[in-house]
Image (cartoon, rainbow, N blue to C red; front, side, top):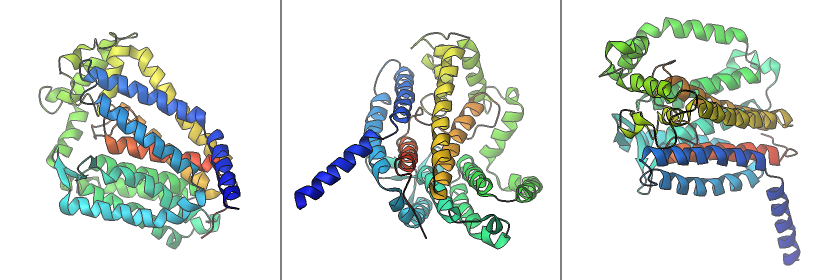
Length: 375
């Protein structure tokens, strides 16, 4: 009897492994390998200190991604609220005893890594909203009292992340939350009212912004006003992007990065390093890979038979694509510098972990299409 159960379990696991989204896994691995190459170049042709650690993190997180994908979706449905409140607890811990770096208190020192709970919280918020809306009707979405709880689900982590301070991540939490509300059928008037309220609150928000945040906005409006000070980052980024031309300067031949003119080349401005070395052609190839990953997520959402899976897959896809858009728009000077990493490319353990957890949940939606979830 015991051997029969084990055999059935082994066969079930084998079937799940066989039906994993190997195309998506291949795309994720390809983009990550570009990240390893860029980090190798950022260190002047050395695996240390960034590329080797990033490769090790990817290997561990990729195993976790596959395990997450193989767990039945009903378990993630049941674990949603415990994970959400755990995430809020970690954000509170950051406020009390978090590690301070680069003028912000965003990390918890675990010894073997610096954990940034706000990165993981963006995944959990998608799960929480997907669970809340999975049984919602159009009539529910038209009732304002019904939208009070999802609004609180979004605003609680938004406020805690804003206190760190991390304006970029807090705004992304709101944007992802607003996108899921829209998908669930919230009235367009809610967005119009929210937009008017946001515009009206700009003077008040400006008053409470930190000096460096105000400077980033002013620098975005006129980067040439202080090219050696506040405008240095974006000025050097534009120089590097332009100098790469169509075909780039070649691997390990980017002068802006090699001569250390390019700031934060292993994190926020890693796309600039890649585009300088590989040119417009290499940048477009990377964007196409990102686009294919987004399309995979979109297809998973469209094929999902349960609202929970549909909202979860689409929300995670939007979260991923928002990070890509904001990072690349930032380094091109199209939006203010907000410190958003480029998923799977930028150096960072929590960023890599959050991205692969998201993909694991996405693949769980695809792998368990017949799973029924209930409140």
